[in-house]
Length: 116
Image 1: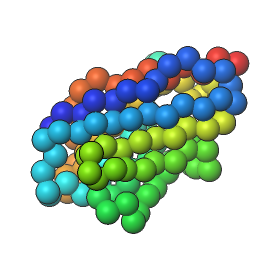
Image 2: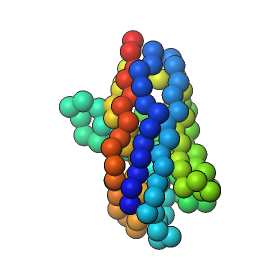
Image 3: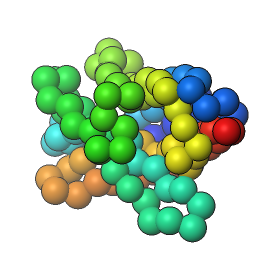
């Protein structure tokens, strides 16, 4: 599976960004796609996920109410709309595919930097 995340950049606190993840090689047994992030010096953490039919979404407490995950099945693409960004959101953001209970990562992430 190949996952290409894009859309990161430098933004001021309170601003917005929209991340895109283009997936290829995803088989029909995939259950969901999601976003994770890794801040400098920290472990990678879950951000959000969306199932294949877009009927179920989940968010971490840190981003709930500010971030929205969506998908375009025709393009095998998911998005992460990030609003009200704060410096604690600074991280490399990765997209992932879930097979069974395992999250699979492929490709480079995209860097989001929020200045205060």
